[in-house]
Image (tube, rainbow, N blue to C red; front, side, top):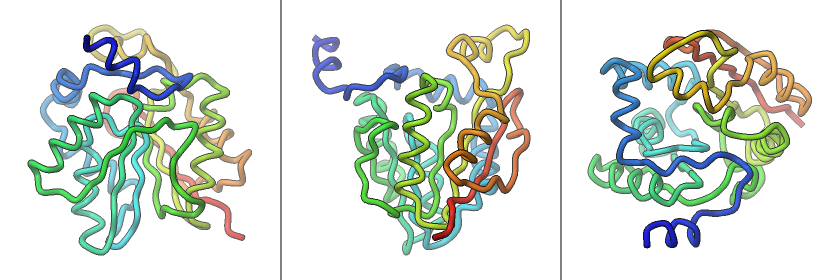
Length: 215
């Protein structure tokens, strides 16, 4: 029964969709060795999420980062998270309600963002690019540029080049990786200006911050 519902409600995408929402938060806690709060605050600082900004989190999972972002944007800002899994969106919505956070979550895919042009100041993508085939990743980047305001920022975090690892991190690497230089090149082809790259502070995770072109 659950499988049937999942097939009817999950939007079509060429990317890998993770549905195990109940285990996702536990895995994140284990990967960060219990320092998830500090890690996500570091990510939001690197992304320079500020008061009054409108933020989109693509591939938001169970909504942890988007919920944390609401404290950074304050009452004059807004945060929206999208995910292709109805289970993730449902869990994220419940978590936001429990936390009293005004983040909104909806079902959507990275290559077809259901938002108007120049809607957001910041777009976040954490551990999502490696789930997308190259062509789909390119379409996602095009969509990110479309929904970003001129001069807006995109913040991408993902696994770098694979290394010989075991355990939980190796589980993720089986899904793939995205080299930092590939992310930089992908965004540069669309006119983005890379502002900063570097290690995200956890194992082989790296980040890219880039600015959307001005008119």
